[in-house]
Image (cartoon, rainbow, N blue to C red; front, side, top):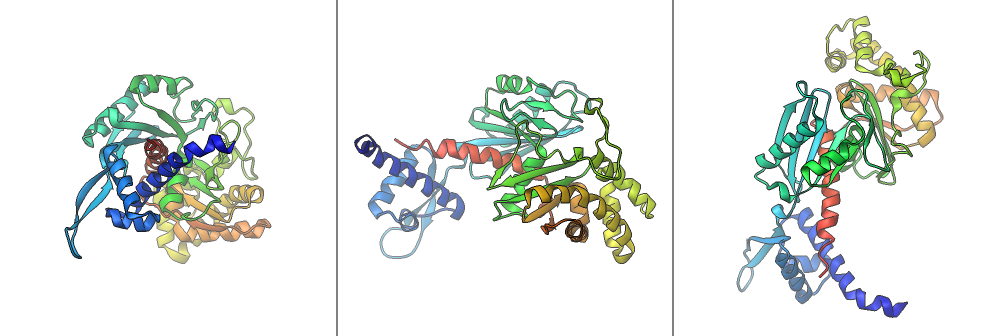
Length: 391
């Protein structure tokens, strides 16, 4: 067996070194060959060969010189941004937002479109993707992956949408139609799951392998991150926390009739507005009412207390099963409530269960679903592009 492995060893080492160098260039910016050698532990000769190999493959490019020391200035190298592009798409009931990023993660194009006047999801996504790439001055052929964040269930086996409560025109078979139309790898992912990816990358859950994210907005959802990976469940329904049967709300017997499930009835935007009106905050927007209560300080406490008690029913049910160290409150309501709401939910959960997770507000303020879609696409494309350096 060792004889069959030995011939592949130098090749494998080259691939590992190339990948390590590319990751360092992404993380630390332009570097010289000598500095790459120091950081990777490679000799100057090996580091120079590595850079030449990556330059020949079009993955790195010279971006300047570093002055200092004797002799000629050292060349600085960086990952070539145009070596690949990705597109992330945030799909909602009224609009679609698409953004194009290069392989460094820089967002270089963005478009937003209304979906109210069309019943053609393929056409909507096609236009959004093409326009996002065009605004980034990127050829569609350079787009290596498109990730769409969508409400509802995504089948882990087929990757297709199986149920989307507020997107009735999005249906099984749509994934194949989009792949045929765009001639590019297309991936669906639940929108709340993508928000958790963004939270782990640059939000309140950085550095944590295990946490849950509770999204509270027009609807309510849950993302579960275990061991640094999203947990989808056997049918993709893991995290559909709105369907939790909880006290204080009637439990529908037939979900196919689109009746609001129990926990959704307690904490969805409509219910939040009703609670706000009862406490003297008639703002028509749920997030606006929450912000007003937070700004009112002690005077807004009763309203926040009531909302925290309701939220704690779902959070506690989740935490006694998963026992995560952290719960992130996201979505329009979770973000608006900030620490004032998160602290109350943490207190309520500890009061009614044996677990005591830390509950914090989201650390992201703008388009977490879109950023999670881009991050998911980038992770996959970097594996493909950087992993193809073996020669």
